[in-house]
Image 1: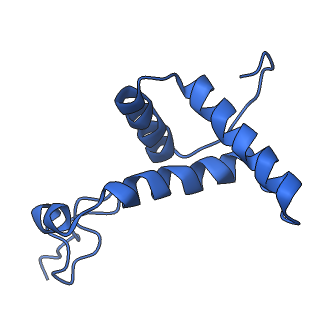
Image 2: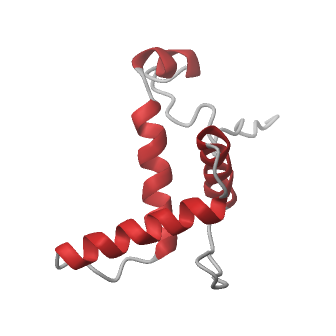
Amino acid sequence: MSGRDVSIRLEPSYWEGLEEICRREVMTVDELCDDVRDRMEQQARHSSRSGVSLANALRVFVVGYFRQAATERGHARAGHGQGRPFIATPFDTVPATSDT
């Protein structure tokens, strides 16, 4: 990114989200990270907000990107809105049953 080696720690699901976004937008992860960093720097110059890490900015970006694409129809297809918010998420696990 920008000719500098940068290490970013993100959870696997965020990396997967970034890679999916990059496939859709036909860009590399490095290009996307550079764009996010540039926008962070622009916002910092125009406001008193600063000190946000690139990793946190990327997390917010990924969530925002997919939230913009979420529709009521998509939520219904995913089974959302039925009192089971963890369905089809990394936390969607079948509870262990006991034979007692």
